[in-house]
Amino acid sequence: MIVSDLVVYPVKGCGGYSVAASAVDLTGLRGDRMMMLVDDDGVFLSQRKFPEMAALRPHLSDSSLFLGGNSFPVVLDGPRVPVVVHKWQGFGIDQGDDAAEHFSDVLGRSVRLVRTPPDLRRESGGDTAGLVGYADAHAVLMISLSSLDGLNERILERGAEPVPMNRFRPNIIVSGWPEPHTEDRVRRAVIGDVELAYAKDCVRCAVPMVDQETGLRDGPEPTRTLATYRRDPDGGVTFGMKAAVTGTGTMAVGDKIDVLEWAS
Image (tube, rainbow, N blue to C red; front, side, top):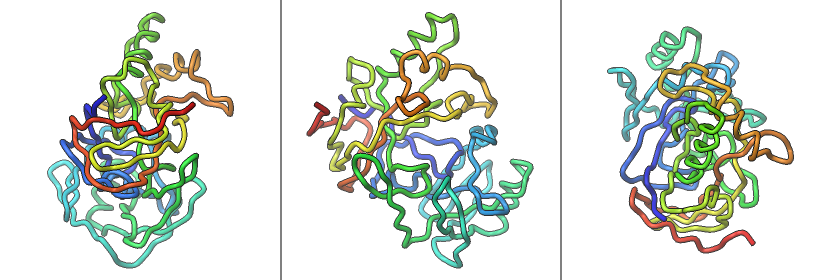
């Protein structure tokens, strides 16, 4: 069981990119969803309402955010502006007019780009509490290739087209587990020198029905097929495991996944 891919999403709701290795903080992979776009009321934007965000591919360095040949300096601290992510209300550091104008032009609506304040301490819930940046609720999302293979077999049996892994926007992709959804049974694991602990199964919204290359809605798969065998008792369908980071460090593609505790 090894890490086959690591994916960072620097701006919440926008496209991600693979990295060979990553430092892992208590909030997840370094730089993951520590920025987001907000409307004039400070409410976050997501692919649920704006699927075209999927086609944006920002890249992050230590000091700049890059998008479409443009670069914008990362403002680490400054005046706070109020922001909202679902029920959570907090603050962000505005990234300036140049970034706001560029993203507004690309999306055709008025938006601002914000970054997490350096003193942010947003707590996540689930079976293991942790910290999170601007991700919906948890630090890390893990999915195995066998889970995707099992789903696509069912989709093909229905005469529909299989879906790629990027529909589910995971951070850690695992190869080597023969049984689909083995990640759901992991309770504590070490990857590299990073320790993760199970928070909850990931209940999916409408985003997996967005083509992550084109930014266009492309349902009803995979949700239609997931509904036949992955229904959550409280509603919705599940795919992937959300984890809290309980020990920081570094992980890399090719690292072995040592499971310290399984669900009974």
